[in-house]
Image 1 (tube, each protein chain N blue to C red):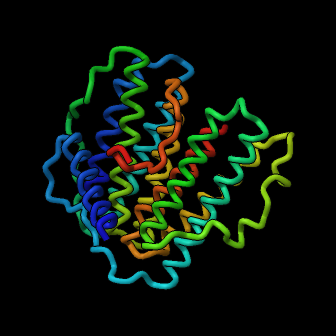
Image 2: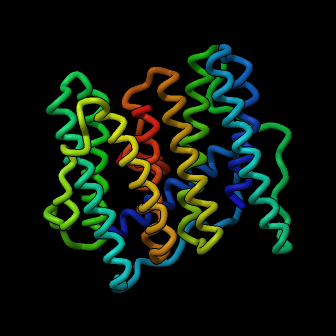
Length: 162
Length: 137
């Protein structure tokens, strides 16, 4: 609970910084609804699916780094971001998401051939960003900033790899 | 409302930014400014359709730091995109449907542009874990 309460304050703090930076003193509230008392099953499923995909992507980056260590400086922060995404969702769900999801069975190494592993990661990021965007539009508003930020991070990863 | 103001400020910021960039990076700034204009106009239109008067642009916005050369111009461009991302992320909380779509697109596009400018500036890493979260994670 404390994590969620803290994150809610962070949203307020972030909003205030921006408003102050823009020289504003508007009365617009940046606070939305309170944390829901219990997460709805479809939301929990959507969050778990995004988290699983984050862990799958992290594993693909591990694989890519192992095969191409000179790209490690570029790839490691992206891999770490995916792990952070899964962890943040886990905290939101108030439970750890098991890394052994069904989707993990789709081994990335087969698709990431030596010809263009970065290209494969890039298209995986784009597709994953699309799925997180769809999830962001579907979940209760409390979870939308987290899932939206994950969608944006994935899209920016694709840009970073281009 | 906050989003309109943030977009006004972003459009203003790209004036001094564009003036200090070389030919290869100025196109990035021009594209970014055009995107902010389009997004601002889309939000203003949506507010108008609901009979809400959008805030008008100020004559000028305070810049966080002087823009004197390409490096400081790129730094400001990165900051503009990070702050715009934060506004759109906050907007996700109290929107649904088409409005949330507009907000998440605003967040995604700002994050992509921030990465483009970090690349142009040679800033690494070129991405952040949670776009729109301003304080250290």
